Image 1: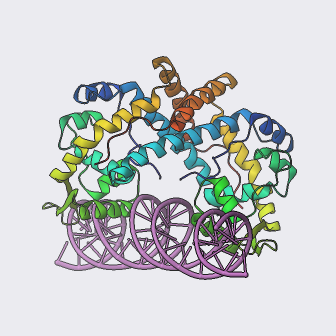
Image 2: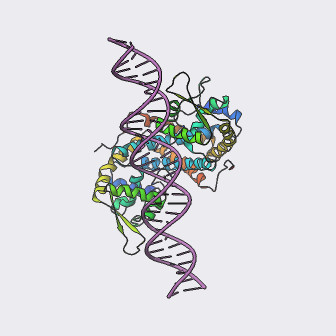
Image 3: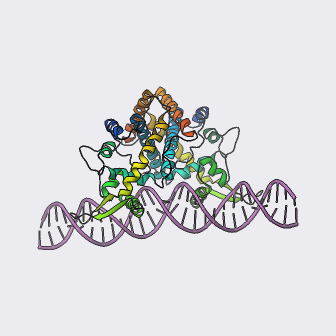
Length: 190
Length: 190
DNA sequence: CGCTGATAGTTAGGAAGCTAACCTTAATGA
DNA sequence: TCATTAAGGTTAGCTTCCTAACTATCAGCG
């Protein structure tokens, strides 16, 4: 499992106690921070388990979804493509859209190609580039997998009302905006 | 970066549109799900960057924190130890507390030992076991690192008021309880 | 035309996860 | 007592991420 140290969170009283030793420790901030990381992890772990049962990984699934934009119109709307943007087709474009390095994308495409989900072809216009396309097997996989995937997400979020979901998204967006700022106070490098 | 596919989230209208094609897609659930994963990722990435600047990884940092409980009283309260529980000392105990496999813990301890942060000694009472202890260098590191770490967490959470932090933790706890349930509806395995 | 620099893709090597298998040692029980 | 089971630690091999370096190609400019 990804983020270590999150199995047993300290109780709030312990944070208050520890704050006496560490003046920089803001108990409610640490509490919110640890809960956010842990819950995010748990939710992600459920999704990952779902994918693993279908012999798929989160990274490879992300690549398939990005490529799918170019095949199915409803996929384009789902993935947020603007105006018939057909989605990236080259390793570099996919890496950029997915937020990983080109080297990592090479590895993901290697595995997907080995498993018969994508094909690599040289770009006829620019001989530096490759074009990556989905195979019919990949489209079959997505059509079979996505309904269950969406059901699982609905189940995860079922404890929250519509209003609570809105509130959650609003609070998360505030944090997201903060992390995008130049740089929050950090420990000075040695 | 860990979770692929989270760089550009689909707009809410796109989710509504996609829901027409996928009856199982609950737009507000997917919206909350994606925002939770992405924000968690961004927050974690900041922490990780902070650690990386000090040549430390999240996993190894977690191990140091667990071991620190046995050295410093304030660490014990911070880590949620009950009544002078001195924290795990063996690889198996650390693996359990951190939520990773014993094999992974072996690797983490290998690296920490190589870098001079921990020592391995055989347990005199049970010759199967090893005892892992912090070196003075590790304690120095933590004393130097933690204030900045806590400052960074406070900065991340600064956009939220105390009331908003409470709300966030409450909503996350609801989801956390849900993910602990036997198993939410998932796609059937092939 | 021929440099020079930027871009695309890959390769190599490392870290941190995992599972599965292995060896040693302890605990249990017939 | 001694065989069996359980537990601790490690190893080996896989995946997926990273950075750094390399090769091939394109684009610009003298």
